[in-house]
Length: 299
Image 1 (cartoon, rainbow, N blue to C red):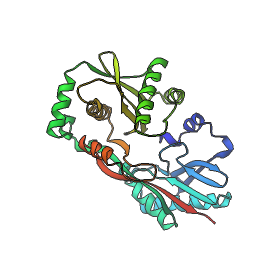
Image 2 (tube, rainbow, N blue to C red):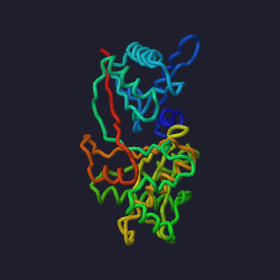
Image 3 (tube, rainbow, N blue to C red):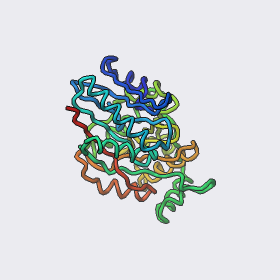
Image 4 (tube, rainbow, N blue to C red):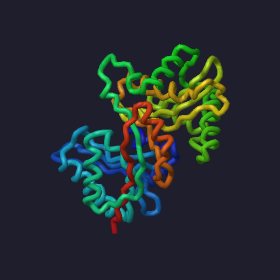
């Protein structure tokens, strides 16, 4: 997983002495790992990231394998003097292991500290050759078909100027919606450099004018995560470019072999739903789910 990679910790300048990793073996075989960062006696899996581990070697592990990994990891954290373990869990749809991880943590005494409404597009429901426009309602599909005939282009931001433009679109959009600033432009550039095959900085242009932008991470071999997106406040178009952007992201994910496009949370920082955002994602084919933060007190 991208967020558990050494390069991701390097990107976020995590000191070596703060990094913590536990490997669980059974019968001489690696079952899985729990990776994270320890700060002032608190372990966080998902440091500077939307979620963390545990990571299981097998995509469909047994109950015993998952429970064994969770128990051994919590025991190792206790032995290292850690008093609190905080796990930013992946959405349950990522793999059959995720519900078992949640179960094992709850059985170990975890409580739910936070829960987001999360939405995703399951690309496995689109048989080979199926037009992704079938995910949309009739009117929205008609609008996207019309937009596809117009001079829109979606391309990666590869130069410093392009990255600055992308960041400007996203920052202005967030500010207009009363949201805190997102990832800085220099961070996005460094993330793309650290993970050239996984970090996609995408600009949607009408003719030569930027009208929307998106940041997409390939967080697993077959899962794309929409980290940020938004339209330009001054796009000047007859209709919002976000319908076309959403369709384009689904199409890119499908053609690149992804089975899921995680469109991210549709809730605020306190977990309350953003009804407008949730409805928009539903209208472009996304299904609802959750993303939880579980906390275990180890003393």
